[in-house]
Every structure is written in C-alpha cells, then in structure tokens.
Length: 220
Image (tube, rainbow, N blue to C red; front, side, top):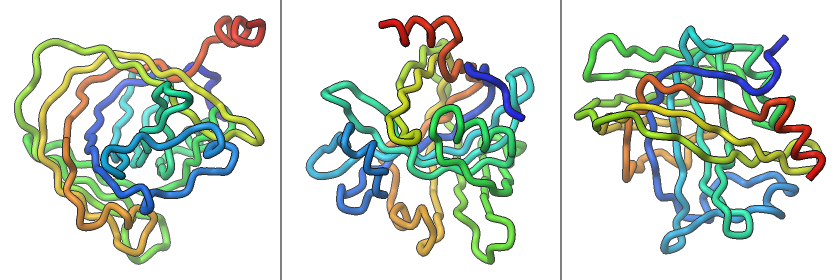
C-alpha cells in the first residue's frame, strides 16, 4: 500500500519558523518526551510550520501541512513532528507504520500559479472550519543549491524511531502570513508572526534508511 523506505521525494516547501513559549507547545508522547527536550531560547521553542507539495519524480506525489518542534537528544538536534496532514492514504499509512509520524488526512489547495504569491489552505473533510491557511510572498533567490540534513525523532510503539533525512534544495526568502484556526490543532500559532520564512525550492530528499543501512545499524 505504500513504498518501502527510503522514500525518494521531490517538490516545493514553504516553511515558517515561530518562537513559541514552551508551555504552549503540543505535548509529545511519553516515550518521546522521556528521550528529547525542546531547544529553547529565552523560554521559547522553535516550531517549524510548512506547506509541502511532493511532485512527480519521487515515489509519491501529494500535498502536506505540518508543524514540528526542534528538540535535542543528549545535545544532538532532532526534529519531532507534532501535527501533520496529507492528501494521500499511502503517505499516511507509510508515515505512521514506518516512522511513527502521526499523519492525518485533509484536503488541500496550494496555489503556486501566481508567483510571487502562494495561497494555501487545508481542510478536514466534514469540518466547517479549515485547519488553517497562509499567504506566502516569495522574494529573492539565494545562489546555488544547499544540502539538507536532519534527523526526525518520533514515538513508534514503545520506542523512539530516529529517521535520517538527506537532500539538496534551492532557497528563496519569503514573507508569510499564517491564519490557523484558533480553536484547531494549530491554534497555538494563531496571531503569531514567524521569525523566518523560506521557500525550499525544487528539493530532492531521501527520507529513511536503506535495507543495508538498517542491517548495519542493527549489528552496531
């Protein structure tokens, strides 16, 4: 029903970073909160929220809205995804079963046809109010293509699943106005301005480990 890991993915991401008081963060699952801690600056944690279009050329193509907290595990930086919606059942099931990513289903409009404006909305079918929307104004391109490398840490059953993500992408600076539903799961972002917004353009990613890497890790 879904591809085996690793997933090779291509697409576009529109990312904003917020600084949120630690007490307002979504609660992590107990097995995960025992292993990681939010990275804080003056009592505020960094939360990334992103709209993503995974495009043909990868193993799956679909749309996504997510929020994630920057955490550390004994000083090693990790990313923990707290809320995420997709419009692909294969992505939902694969994300949950392979890596413990708590994907839910939603319907999306991510309009990129009016460059430099990107207008995005996500709605759960049957719900009156959307999860949220955003208007992103794209700005200048940064030269070259930059490497991407981070580790996602999620609760998978009774243990922590650590998943490497690697790739390359172009970058554009951006301004973004987010409009999450105040009473919804992203309500803790309502009324807040991001401290940084970027478009991660024409990226390619390898999400997860190959069978060889998994066997090597099991032996170590």
